Amino acid sequence: MTRFSSANRFRFQFSISKYAFWWCLFFIVLLCFVSNHLLLSDNDRRLLRNRGKGWEQRVLSSASPRSSTGSTVLVTGAAGFIGSHVSAALRNRGDGVVGLDNFNNYYDVSLKHDRRAMLESSGVFIVDGDINDQVLLKKLFSIVQFTHVMHLAAQAGVRYAMKNPASYIDSNLSGFVNLLEVCKEAKPQPAIIWASSSSVYGLNSKVPFSETDRTDQPASLYAATKKAGEEIAHSYNHIYGLSITGLRFFTVYGPWGRPDMAYFFFTKDILQGNSIRIFEGGKGGVVARDFTYIDDIVKGCLAALDTAEKSTGSGGKKMRPAQLRVYNLGNTSPVEVGSLVSILERLLKVKARRVATPMPRNGDVMYTHANISLAEKELGYKPTTDLRSGLEKFVKWYLTYYNQSTVN
Ligand SMILES: *[C@@H]1O[C@H](CO)[C@@H](O)[C@H](O)[C@H]1NC(C)=O
Ligand SMILES: *[C@@H]1O[C@H](CO)[C@@H](O)[C@H](O)[C@H]1NC(C)=O
Ligand SMILES: CC(=O)N[C@H]1CO[C@H](CO)[C@@H](O)[C@@H]1O
Image (tube, rainbow, N blue to C red):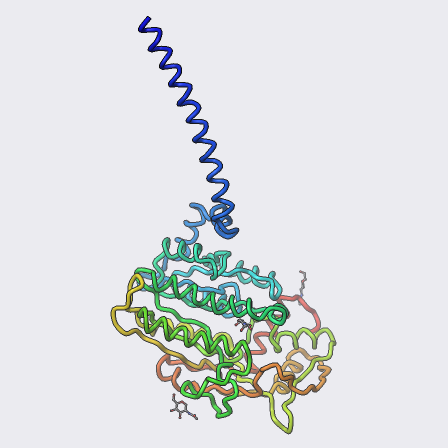
């Protein structure tokens, strides 16, 4: 009897624990389902799906320098114009490079994918993701100890900006802050080099523009956000000991450039026989730009990286004051837009159909001219490409890339 009842009790307990087991399982599944849907953003889920072991391996191998003295650099906006050139140059000299880009469709995405293909063939992996994605950034910093961050990403998008300026500012500025937050927490903190812009000089009319000139009169929202970026950089440097270098780029052009820039769409329109609008300043004022060739800019970026001191903080705590710098990277010889078109006409052997238009009041400044003596002194920066030879290389690339046969 005793044997029977103990067996019975055993069976009874077994069936209870079986019930408990199934209920537990049910609750666990329910919990997973709910938390997955309530707590995880789309991005997190994408991260979990696509970023497993193989992905980590690719990040790691891209990050490892080939030379023993090489740096390990995170390049944001790596599929962009300047980002792709800088990534290639870093990789070619033996540094470890991990790219990050969200491949947004502001301009022809296939151009970005082709830049990516070019970089991947030289061993640079570009992570498909956004600088506003904290989870992703933290993950990257947990896999790799970056010595430097080259921050060249920004959300362009003119049409979207008109409809929704707030969100557009959001993505440029909050993206930068997001990145700084992750950098300040990192152990060790990387040094940061980032893209500011000549547009910060705004209404300043004293030329050439020097770093010490006033930059508190932005003429566009874009300029205002770049200026804000410089101030934010100051605060992160001051509070957390991050080493930060801002580069004020002056109208960068060259092969693999951005289709939304004048030299690029002028080339396209001239070849297609479309008329082009050339802005003119009122009352004899000239519209001119200090066009700077991409290879010169790349040299300036690398020199800024090589001369950057280490950040002094660690894990969010400042130890002592850190380096904070800003440099003009220009060509220091402004060219009128009309002359740019004449050079293109000669290179393309096609006459442009010019339509002179008064400069619209959209905040673009009339004239830019960089004083580069500070970059020359401290970075050894010395641009060597004049607009004619630079455009020649651009046109050559353009014709090959778009496979046109207008020129023999
Ligand atoms: C964000 O940055 C991009 C690229 O630098 C620029 O084209 C765009 O105008 C910026 N947006 C704003 C609101 O400044
Ligand atoms: C250029 O900037 C330097 C400081 O970096 C300054 O000493 C020099 O006077 C400036 N040159 C001109 C022509 O403004
Ligand atoms: C100008 C140019 O590069 N033309 C080339 C376009 O592509 C075809 C076929 O892919 C080539 O045969 C042309 O030489």
